[in-house]
Length: 176
Ligand code: SF4
Ligand code: SF4
Figure 1 (cartoon, protein in one colour):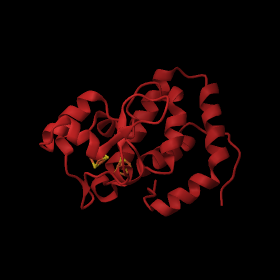
Figure 2: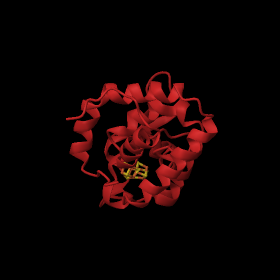
Figure 3: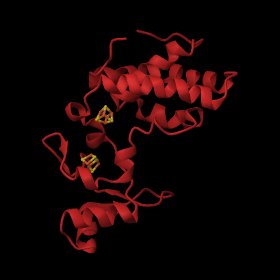
Figure 4: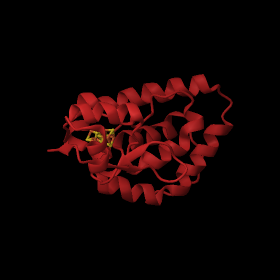
């Protein structure tokens, strides 16, 4: 399978395939397979796709997403940047949107993205380490999260597209 890594094309296709992606989500929920079996296909697909995509070349999540920082992340980053906790928080962070716990960076792209690389890699937030979260269990319950990341992350885009084929989709065609 040819991998798509052109971010503007991925964004365009995310708009075009909005309904298709939601239909595939509904289809997944109806499949007569255990969540474990679906997770196995998702993991095989994710690993295969990830091997073909260079995150250090992409870094789009660090430009577009807003990772959530919990207290342990903030303490670790404050230590890494050699700033007192309060000074670090004031300089870089604001509260996460209402209804969410934790804090987020004040600006996007992330202030620690330098030359397309994470300058605090060893101390990066747990949310960054986990992104794009496809390794987590029970994919069928997480499809909205995957659809939310589909327009931003080539790994998610290509994994979701590949799953449509691998899991024998019967979805509304909207290709252009
Ligand atoms: S996780 Fe996705 S968005 Fe982030 S750098 Fe890798 S491919 Fe790009
Ligand atoms: S802390 Fe590092 S990995 Fe996380 S968004 Fe910023 S640059 Fe990216």
